[in-house]
Image (cartoon, rainbow over all chains, first blue to last red; front, side, top):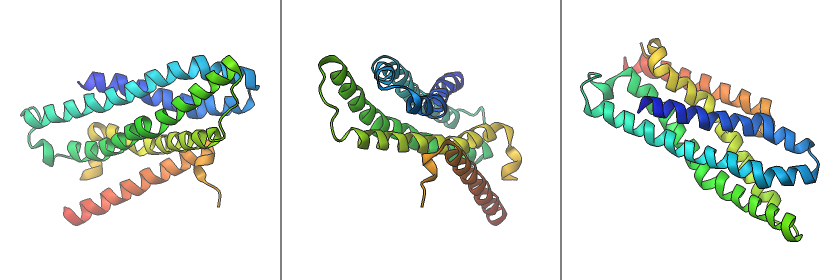
Length: 165
Length: 34
């Protein structure tokens, strides 16, 4: 469970940083035809891995925590420093996954559909498209911002017990 | 006022500040709750 959580988490946060640190600044410099191609073929694939790895990270994480609660491998798990750190990091992670599934993906899905329609039959871009892009960007940037404390407390659960002493 | 999330550097700085804020909150909790 822990390795599943770590592998899917690396995939998720790696793609989050790709979107924020690489794709968004690059899209701003690309010409419209190249950007349209990327939105039709690159972005859907990246978002597929992004949203499912986000869900997998949360599910593996919850399974690990419930497993630790019900086993006596870690004595008094709920009262431990490890659990308190995981509780903070996990809460942030669940907020981030909700952002992915309920804000970023629905808005990106509409952008991909509109861009594909424009490329295929010249349908004009909907007037709402900039608003969809803005919502998705702010949710994505919020997740990038929250990823710093989330990762700190996740790693701190094992590597920084002195935080709680 | 400019939204810090409009830039990558503003996003990173905001994230680091939230981290520091949470660490301070934890330390206050530890000193109060023992």
